[in-house]
Structure formats: C-alpha cells, structure tokens
Length: 281
Ligand SMILES: NC(=O)c1ccc[n+]([C@@H]2O[C@H](COP(=O)([O-])OP(=O)(O)OC[C@H]3O[C@@H](n4cnc5c(N)ncnc54)[C@H](O)[C@@H]3O)[C@@H](O)[C@H]2O)c1
Image (cartoon, rainbow, N blue to C red; front, side, top):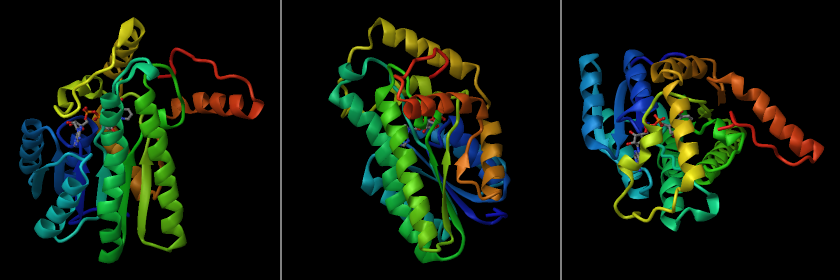
C-alpha cells in the first residue's frame, strides 16, 4: 500500500509504547484510527493525542485474548468507519523466570495475549478485508525473539516464534489466493516502552505467578536496562510505514540482530549445541 490518506487503521495495544506510536503515525498519514487496549485510561490519552492531531478516532477497550472482543473490535471499525485497511496486531506482554517454573496462569496469560491475540486478529479481520476488496495490510508484531532464544523468557519466545510461523503461513496463503490483502511481520529489538512492566495489565483471572528466582530477577533487570536504552517508539512507527510502502513482509528495524540469527542457524546446520550469549535477549 503506497498511500494511507483517508484509509482506516486498527491498532491493538494502542494505550502506550509501539502501539500508541503506530496509531499516531497512522493519524499523521491521514488515516482514521480505531484504537484498542485493555488499559482504559492511557488508551483515552492516545485518543486525545489523535484528536489533537485532527484525526478521526474511535477507541474500544478490548482484551485481545478474547475472540469475541476482537470480533467486536472489527464490528466497530466497520460500523464507525465502514471498514479497515491496515490492522496492527500489536498488543503484547512479557514475563521472565525459569521455563519449568512458569505457572499455568503465566503461560496462559502470555500466550493468550501474544499468540491468541494475533490469531484472533487474523480470524476477525482477514476474512472481512478479503470480502471488502482492494488492498489491505495486516501487521503482526513479533520480535527478534521470533528468531533467537535465550534463557528465562520461554513463554514470550514461544509466543513470538509462533507468530512468525502463522504470519508466514498466511503470507503464502494470501499469495496463492492472489489476494490484495498482505501480511507483514514486525520484529523489533529493544524499544523504549512499558513492556518490562507488563504485570500492570495482568488479568485478575490469571493471578498465579511462578517464582521469578534470582536469575529471573537479574534477567528482568537486564531486559529493563536494554529497553530503557532502546529505540524511540515513534522511530519504529515511521520505519513500519516506510516498509509497508515498500511492500515488505519482514519489518526489521534492528538489523544488528542478524548475526545472532546467523549463529543460531549455524548451530542448527552444523549440529553444534546452542551457546547463550549475554546480548541474546
Ligand atoms: N519494547 C520492546 O523492546 C519490544 C521488542 C520486540 C517486540 N515488542 C512487541 O511490541 C508490542 C508492543 O509492546 P510495547 O513494547 O509497546 O509494550 P507496552 O507495554 O508499552 O505496550 C503494550 C500494550 O499492550 C497492551 N495490552 C496488554 N495486554 C493486552 C490485552 N490482553 N489486550 C489488549 N491490549 C493489551 C498494554 O496495555 C500496552 O498498552 C508487543 O507485542 C511486544 O511484544 C516490543
């Protein structure tokens, strides 16, 4: 898609971080924007910022792990604005600790938001986008954690590896159908957002946390430090729109991670055991 003016964007996880930046960038491109998040108050702030830019905006409190809620979000886009053209399945959460000590609730929470949220987004929007006709684009947010794996972050890694797989699969399906609907995979490295404090939006229905332990705490501190030193979300959002204009499937704002992916692949091809490097977060 080359021109976004007068088109409609939908952004999940739009209350802050990369999602808010994507929503504001979409607005700056002249799009009407449907914003969604579980966190109502900061979602309202995103709405205010979009209105201050002069954009048409509708906000909808939405838990992306709930299929019916994501269907309702699509209903809102169609009833308020008559459709959608760019859908960002962006909402995500992160937690740390030993993989085998994560509680069932930990796994359900992270996979519910990061994986099922994307699955629901694809199920609720892609059929409508196909039926609507014309060009449209779905952008699923994974992470460099879709390509590499380190310790203490297993549920997050599992979710992001899976998002890579399902997005690539959908890409092939849409190409085979000669559809004008495209999908892209956004895989940032470190970005200055609230992701290291995801517990703030943990649902009350999934309260049981596995122990973090000393190593998990140290890892969480390292992730926090990395994120604090990360890219600005608005730089990522600008990059995403540039890549959409170029019709890119892979949206990789941090190419410095590529050597780590190469090392992982080399370990696979050479059948040598994986070695953890400290910067492999
Ligand atoms: N920040 C990074 O370094 C980084 C790196 C790679 C990938 N990502 C990915 O970027 C995406 C955005 O995260 P961010 O870094 O902006 O973090 P963030 O915490 O600032 O934003 C995530 C948003 O998702 C919302 N959210 C959480 N659970 C939700 C749910 N069930 N339904 C709807 N919304 C929900 C949160 O309220 C929050 O507003 C995530 O998918 C994350 O995994 C982030």
